[in-house]
Amino acid sequence: MTRIDFYVQKQINQTTHEHFICKITEKAWQNQHEIFLLCANTEQVNRLDELLWTFSSASFIPHSSTCDDGGETVILSTEKKTLRNYEILINLTNDVPEYAGKFSRIIESTGYNEAMRANARGKYKYYKDRGYPLFTHEIGKT
Image (cartoon, rainbow, N blue to C red):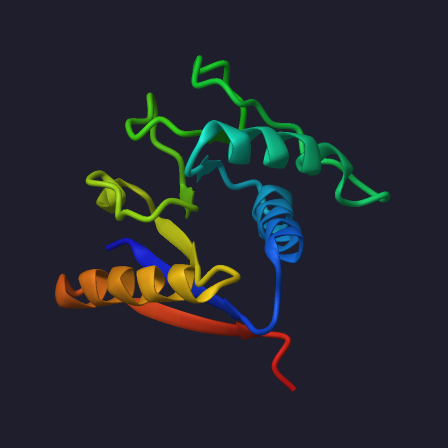
């Protein structure tokens, strides 16, 4: 069954949140997973497209923002339907994708403002009600 991981960060802004998404993507990519970043809109695709090349001075993450099935292991898209199965879905939208169960793992973030946190609580309830295994990770907690 698909594993669902929620990441909670305290006191962050949009830039910090997007850098964190890049770090999660980098870790999954370094572990040789195929990753599909489902973005909320094309502006987010464009921001993350740039950040994945530049967020770290020590590395970059090869990726594509098209779903042409060119064999890329990291895809950014707003497309709700994927052309092939990826191991990990990083869901940056407000919805639970109808095809969520085809991934080995889904990464959800509670975002950087109260509206995003409220939406994440709704997604958490959705997954819990359907019996998905849920894990919560508090980032930066001392």
